[in-house]
Length: 419
Image 1 (cartoon, rainbow, N blue to C red):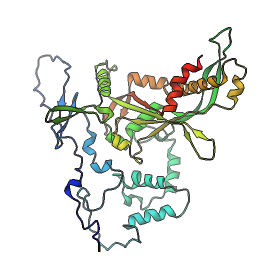
Image 2: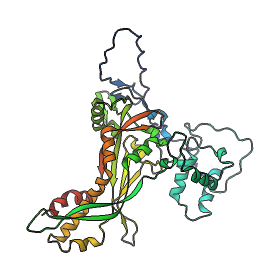
Image 3: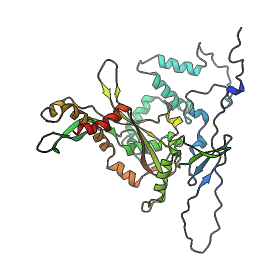
Image 4: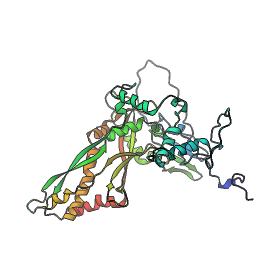
């Protein structure tokens, strides 16, 4: 009989070491005794370094951070799968008073069995993705307690929510505003050149209805108030490896990049808002877009724009069930009446359609980067963050990612469409 994997230990050279978090920050200096002499304030750049961990890695902050999200992040939070029971990092559980029921084969325990039984019975509208979301966002949440559901039913809570919506919440904000009501449908317009010989700059306006998008400021406010924001890095830093030959920079996250450090330094050196002494931090915006075919046997397409926050580690952003992705817009396709609109124009029709597709893309972005966003970009937005501290948050766009065909349409064919 061959031995099972449970009885054969894994050789030590094949066991990867568990990642180790950063060392603690040095203690802040004691406050000097009060003096009667007038105090002169000098703004000095205070660089703070942590101690090295066992991998000889340390951090260098431009100032003392007010919050360290890695202090509440466990290596298991970065895994794409649950850690096996009985591992060293799994906290011990209390011994049950009674012998638990044995799960049916092949389920490892009754919890997994009941979840799979719920998934495969009842309505067929449930999906594997929704089951994963139920586990990640509800059952595995730190504040989830099954005892609190003993006398509560979703139908009763929905009726209670309907009666409460017109009222205000405990913090003075409307409960309706706390829900995701930031989606809106609008129309976008752009100029289409006619190509007449008399005036090469002549154009006509064309309107495309049915553009669905969200307020970027509203998305930013919701993201910074969500429980996931407890893992947001608000102060950038340099990650440094102390090797035998000297110090080497580690570029692994957006908030450890020189671009973020420069943006943060520029923000901290800028004049403050009148009467505001709140901490100023950056919301690192990372956009993606990708035109997608919705089915194999249809021509239906969707062109979504996604938003991620670079304040979050890439290891958490990359987890499918993390909830880090925010849809902010859907770029519509050119309507069928577009060809009828341009058929009387003298410009080349094929190139003109390419030009119109590009202009439609930029028209949607003009709606996204509205006056509210520009105001927030310049003056910031006051947000009570997930750690309970109120800060002034400034959005900054760091990356925009698209596949090659989209970049080709947006950049190269724009020049060809003008001739």
